[in-house]
Length: 619
Image 1: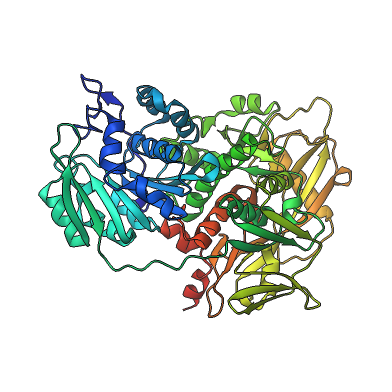
Image 2: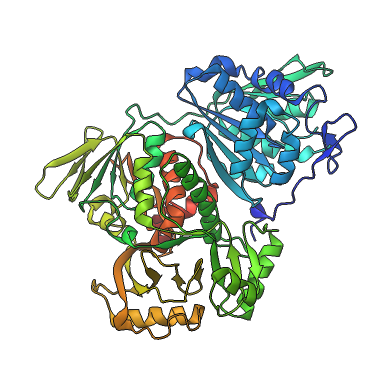
């Protein structure tokens, strides 16, 4: 396991005699006994002159060391609301020992003036898994990115440009790692020119370390019984990337990837032209009647499981936000049951849960009897139950993305893009007759394997993988309650039919249904739910064939396409068989890259997903 992503050890919620939040582990308080919110206002907001600076840029980024119970974030969010500032706020905060959600509720009860905001924070608060977690508030105007892990290691993984820093770790004498030269070096790397900082401490080692890192620091009047505090400004020469003046993008492909990219850009105020060769969205891989949205965990916390688990949590929050706005997808209740392949697999799942202290509301081990009670039918063995996972209709997810775009997405259906041409710093999108369909500064390729038709993307190692799902009419007395998976999946009945899948046919271009695959799907069903398909033959099944877009390392391809003269050309490709789980976070990565905002996942993950990885492997 990477040292950057060790299991999280949570903080304990304790209070001193005067009611101040206290850490037994560090023998220190989280904030002044004279008032946490008043300290946040005096030290961090006033110390960084935030109220005067918010309206000077369209997006403002704060990086905090020490999230604690999130009270600095809540105070900042409240101040932004009260100031009626136009800026989008990105608040990035690192925490090695985060609180459990139940402890946050106890702490937040002591601040009734923040009741509405703190409730929203707890509602979106992630499980205590190592790595990055992105949360959105106020319709995306406020974004919180939580970095769970060691400060120096997590900041090293962060790709962002900070306008201000809140340095709020425990006292240097209690927690010297938080005030190390490694942390200060990372702050300098992240700082925009003239970025500011504020902290309650004026310890000589902190002053010296910040100065060595390139910050010019000075003392101001402290809060309450602290005579002084420290403020500073970055005097380094790190240059910012130029901002895109025209907030307009063209997205090619209206499946899960394309509609998610359009929605994530639209939420940032961008206008999007979505072009699709079919006469409606979700007509290819995203057109299957059902699929699963679920996490994947591993003992070594590898790249695939890290991205899939983060994507699952983000997808759940993304869809919940759309549902709150009245644009919910069609999905089932009750979670997803993942049956163990064998005794070794079941033992491994148990060890993963123990190692990362995964909570029962995220995943729970269930024996065969309980698994059958959850499913409503006999099952083949013990399982992991994911209560927050869902089966859903991918086309409805695409529609909810488009409906949730605030009218900023215009759709052009029935037009096949044949050529991309760069002219005078803009992209021209042309059809087969050479007619211009659209033009703009940014293009996102979200059209799966069709992307390699374009010369700019022809070198990408993408491949189509054929998948066939089967549709089995619901049988009397066989009432499956929740989706079940193992080396395939089956859903409860949708419009009177269960969806069973799916085949995985590499190097096969056959678009028609194959009897062999119908039989294989029935075998998968029997291996999961013995007797559930009794009396059903392959001839009695309906079905559908679609081709997944996959890369040769089975990871998505997200980011800017390298090459001279290709500025503004991005990809959201190769979502494979996990498009429903991956699409929202994949789109957030691409949108953040386009807009120059803080990235939502770790740098090591970004490198593993970036198109340029294939060129590096060749070299």
